[in-house]
Image (cartoon, rainbow, N blue to C red):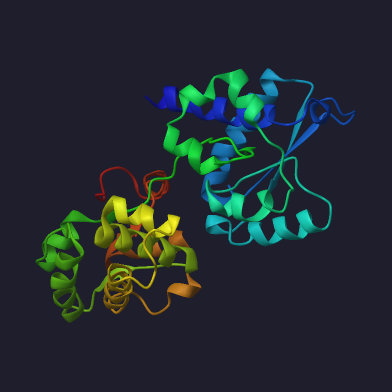
Length: 288
């Protein structure tokens, strides 16, 4: 399974590079830039993909232009400066959807990749719903290369057992056990830098609204002032009362460490934490 996923990720990266205009690959420098926020704990994976690409394409050198900062909080600011300054990167990382379409696509700074989707058969390879996120009536604007799964709850089973609480499977269950944890000096839920709170809000919204109304919220069919949408913020506020006060000063890795060290009961984050925690703490020390 590991080998299969490695190949898929390499193929995904190559796909992004092939999305460049032919002239970009034929420049005298033989250099292609990848602008991303895959640094820190994610850096080795990107370096491995770059090494594989350069092995397959010995005439091309990759300029790994990473900018540190989880979820691209810093990279997006640098990208804006470069785009507005007439120095766009050859390729860059972005989340699917309005993060690209609502910015650089409507500003007419992007190249339509419809031809590439047709040549490579990607219209059939990717789910229609995903392609819709990448597209407007004028074209397709980005290529999926990986999947980040959020809404994953991390905990140390033996710690929860020692504190006398079970694993919450709903937010009501979380709110029920949170006072018990606090009474023992344990922070119920850890947060890190700002984007981790956004992930938390999204998980709360999906739980309150359900899949259909979640989609409607972003298409405008469900106003943010609707009672169901307001209920999301009400529940979110209740949950924030049981998080760490120093969240804004912590990275997502530090927020995860708090669970492992035993000062915090739970952390809601991404599936990629699994790799980070295994490397630092060994197998079998947590659940998700």
